[in-house]
Length: 164
Image (tube, rainbow, N blue to C red; front, side, top):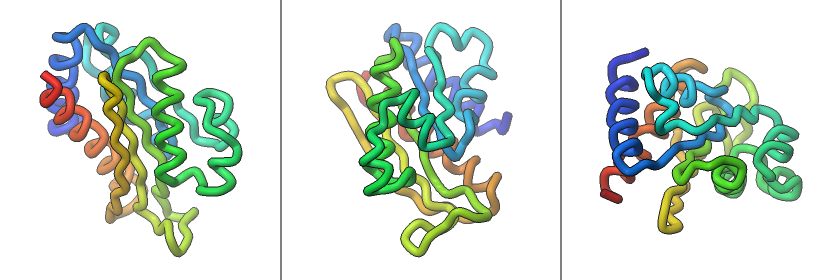
């Protein structure tokens, strides 16, 4: 695992374990990469509860409860979809913290308003904290996915530290 990801995971592990909280992930374009780097750390079962890899729209609906209408109206790569994904991750787990990722990693699948590298994130935590953000990343498929994993972990770690 790249050192920067290992450091982010270690920080997140310390923050979540210290408060007795757990994390759930809902991933599309990253294909479980966040869950993988979290579970690369020995003892992660103390703070990592589960991961959902919901690559297809059907999986987003079945596993996370994303509404078919949301996917039809806004698409899988949208603020509305990742917000429903993160809520679904919380609802279908014992976690108090969750993150969701959906994007266009490429090389295909882009549209005029969602070019390759477009990634939507949503994060959720205690006290009804919610955040959604769109990022535009450069590079090939692996580079886009790596940047998405890093961003997901960085924002969550920052919020965990702020929450005390």
